[in-house]
Image (cartoon, rainbow, N blue to C red; front, side, top):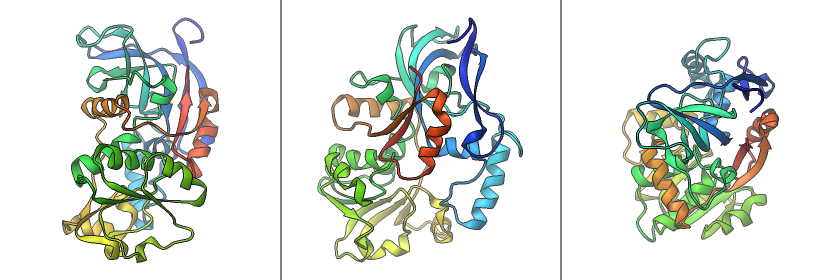
Length: 336
């Protein structure tokens, strides 16, 4: 904190490249009756933060969909020229400083983490609805915990809700070295007992092996879509393929999960026709989901993989690193 009643925060002044993010001194927010005030110690960058800042749909979206979705996203964030949600960052971890009068399940000093869709995590303090709070994993530092929200839950949804692996099932994770993929490999392997194959670039092979993948494919050397192996579940995190291209390696009763369903017209077609082999769904960022992730972390089944850590004052550089698309795990912003 700076002066009394003030804090440092990153403000998104308008839609655009990382340079539109400015570190400023602003008022510490006051919690509503159903909220808590948190001394925030960290956040990490997710696709939604990139979208919030840039005002554009993800690059994986095909051209026509990207233009339409970009306009919709700008309007949903508050306007065509600048976002109404001024402080980016949805994932948070920190210590409760004060409570709204209706908050009964938490106390001052509790260490918490979670995901708040209203943003505000790129700041020293933030207000959060008590309904989204989860207990911080005791075996992680605040910096490590900051890497969990937003990365773990898409993988949770994929394997808990969309296509749950049985023990010994063959699971292919395309994009295994990224922020979501590193969680997906561990959840499929250590929670559900699947045989996991990860797809990544050559520089990430050893890391993907270390987090539990049984096999790793270097996509620069091998076309895995022409393999004779059949997978019960294919999770495509980076939209490298689509269901049609993966038919050869998908079991007859298998499931292809698209993390970014707007990546191709064929994916949209599969959604519209309710193709039983094609699944997609939004991440579950609820307190219940975050508490389940916490249990898996504390039991040693999963852990966050951190690519890099930046201080709040270097948030622009953190966004640049995220935008390269080559981060090994999560890009974290430390506010300790």
